[in-house]
Image (cartoon, rainbow, N blue to C red; front, side):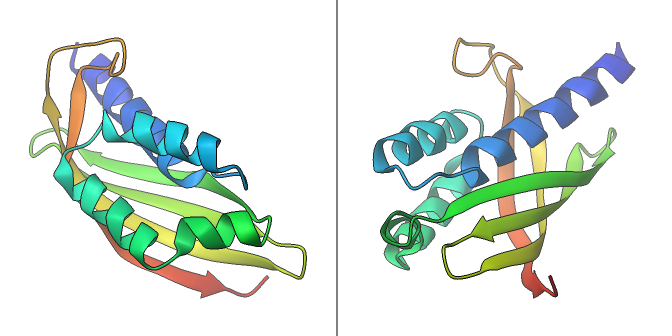
Length: 137
């Protein structure tokens, strides 16, 4: 059962990051997909979403017809503390140029009741970005 929990936790973490960071230049889709991510994490994810919104991140995606994707490189998960580190590569494709960034986020995972919007029955807590830096392409 413990190995199943680790697999489910990693799947939850990866899916959350896909919902949060895979973004096409479509406002309705961005609202839908980021909204799905909000069911999977606590208010720390909402704070990060609000900061991105205030900094014009989402409107910049739409106005520049950018496509953002994230590729999971690895997830370190400590089954005893339930803390994780997510290592990913974010690619932002714009008409003028592509940008590649390394991303490292951290947080914890807690059990919650399973729902249609949260089928893993897990909640990401204390989520924050530790690194989001440009890479040479």
